[in-house]
Structure formats: C-alpha cells, structure tokens
Amino acid sequence: MAAQDRRRILVVEDDARMRRSLHSGFEAAGYEVQAAGSGEEGFFLVYSSRPDLVVLDLSLPGRNGLAILKQLRAERVDLRVLVLTSHNEVEDRVEGLRAGADDYLGKPFSFEELLARIEALLRRTQAPAPSKLVCVADLEMNTLTHCALRNGVDLLLTEREFALLQYLADNQGRTVSREQLAKEVWQQEGARFSPLDNVIDVQMTRLRRKVDDPFAVKLLHTIRGIGFSLRVPEP
Image (tube, rainbow, N blue to C red; front, side):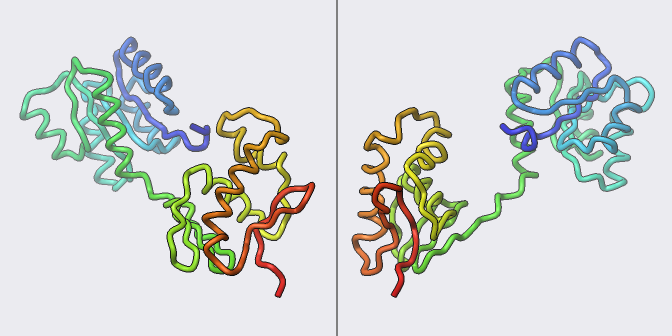
C-alpha cells in the first residue's frame, strides 16, 4: 500500500503495554498509526492529525472515552470510532453505541476480530474510485470496471490484455516500444523477460484478434522495428 494511500488509525489507550501492542499490530497490518495515553492527548490528535478511525478506550485518565465520544458527535466530526474496553456488560455496550460509537468490542479480544471490524468500518468511509472512460474512435475503456467495448460489443479482455490496451490508449497516437511495454506493463507485475522474447508479440496478436479483427477500422498498428501504436488511421 503506498504511503499516501494508507488509512490512519488513532489508538487512545492508557495501558502502555496494550497501546504498544495495538500500535505495532496495526502498523504490521499496513496502517499509519498514532497513539495517545490520555483522553486529552487523544482529543488533541483527533483534530491535529485527522485520523480515519479511532480505537477508543473508555477508562482514561482525565477526560474519559465516553465524554470524548459524545463531544465528537456533538461537534459532528466525520470519524469512525471503535470502542475497545473492559466495560462489556450489555448496558455498557448500549450506552457506548447510543453515545455515537460505530462499533464496540470488549476486552479480552481477538486481534484478528478487531482488524476485521476496523476493515469493515473503513469500507463504509471509502469513496469509490472514480471511473475513467478512455475513448479511441468506437473503442471505450472503463478503468474502474476494466470493461472494454468496441462499437458497443464487450471485448472480453483478460486483465493482462486490458492493462496492455490501456497503456497503448494512454499513449494513443504515439509509438510505444517493446522495451516500454516490458517495463511498464509486465515488470510492474513481477514478470522478468527480455523485450526480445516473443511474449509481447504473442499478447499483441491475441489483443488484435479481439480489438481489430471483427471490425473494419483497425486501431492497433505495428511499427516495424520499433513497436506498436493505438490510433485511428488517416482517411
């Protein structure tokens, strides 16, 4: 997960051992983590660092977790809060949920369950990736759904074929060398081979069968000795 894409978790827990354990566990799971040992410190970090989710203990020195939760909701802070506490009687859970907790988990707990609950909460806040429609003549590609249409007909591309066609479409009108395709389409997925191998040519042949063969206007062009181009031919 790229650093700019990592979701941020704030742990507000007064028990130092528990706080360190949660911090290291969340970091190992790929989250960016901050931790606070008191209610006042946690409340300050909510506003200064703007986390995506807070794991909040209720028994805190100074301002307790329930008071923090009520104030966050009164101020309409857009933030997911999971209460993690030893106060786990039915009336405690009801009070916490009514105060504005998005989820409530009692101690002792399973860390795997805690992670699963956090993932579920963060899915609710994650906006869908914007779709991007790339068009070349009657070819339409949706980079969100990975669907490619030609004259309204689904081309039924594999993931590799779509990645190859998208790279050519992003460079439409330009000639793309085999070396570029080897580096940008294959090697980023872990494959290792020389551009002189025939892997790219085989994939281009398969792609051309789907994109061009059934249609009168040909969009995929081989530039002999150089590479390939996706473009509308001159009249």
